[in-house]
Image (cartoon, rainbow, N blue to C red):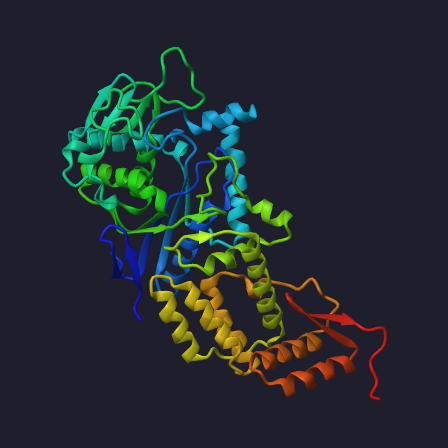
Length: 465
């Protein structure tokens, strides 16, 4: 099955064809580094990583760009409040620059703990001020900019299709519903460049042709994606909360300056919710970090596995029982995998079934079901390992890199346990019992529990009666 992806712009599942044969440009909105990322944020990056892996599985070379927002994102997405970096600086007592460095490093640490592929380009907003100023100048020359006392704004009234990505109905939007209108001409207009307030010295501010200040949040992504991918590239990704404001404004800017909607496909991951279906957010102060999972004895890769159990376009409700179940499933898969010998050839039929699901708009829950069907199939162990290796290139669970902490268990003993697990999965109880006896004879007792079997070394090998 050829790769098909759900495009938010067209609200349809579309066959994917790259703009340039064999190569794909993909831009993913990164974090605003004023605080730690929470696991809801990280779910989006897991989805984007799977997308990149599926693209590679289909033979494409992916140029993957991820931005770091370290200036310009105000506490309201619609240009109200203070800069989140300045707010983070006040909260911690550190400079905004130090805050940006610290939380960027923390984010990259979380990224790697989840086994996300390194982007081709990491780009910081503060490293691209010149590009943002140049992009604003292009928009101004096209006649879409007006000036107020506090900055330059984009005039959305000049675009008949503004907000099409979100299917916004501007006539129904009332001033004051989201933000006070202030000097803006329309509630949907947005800042391109904000002036530093008179008598107030910001930590992050720059000179521009219009006055000293700092860029708006949306212009950074238009400018940096254009620099690294061009003004018309294949895929733009982000969370569903980006659709109505941030991504609609990116499109408006690029249409004004360059006549394109920026990306051919727009893909959006849905929210992670907590108990009561509340969206996880930093503003509420009650968010869960990856480190929180570690403190509860759950691995980051168990969280990755949990993310794979729900389609990226469906809401995933987080709870600790679900995470524990994901950890159990991952542990079981690891134990089986390390007992299978190398040197096999992947089973073509199972690979084809897996590819069908992965290419159906990244249907990873069904792809995981194919994996567990494979485990129960009774195929030779070397074939199982080779086939799972193909799957894991997409799933990203790092099975080939994992080493059991139970290093005292010999490989041949672990292999017998894995064979027993396969026999039990196939309901071959006679073989399962025989394998239990074989392990018992070598001095290893099996303890079956809710988290799977556990081997315990006996003080002396069992003898026949």
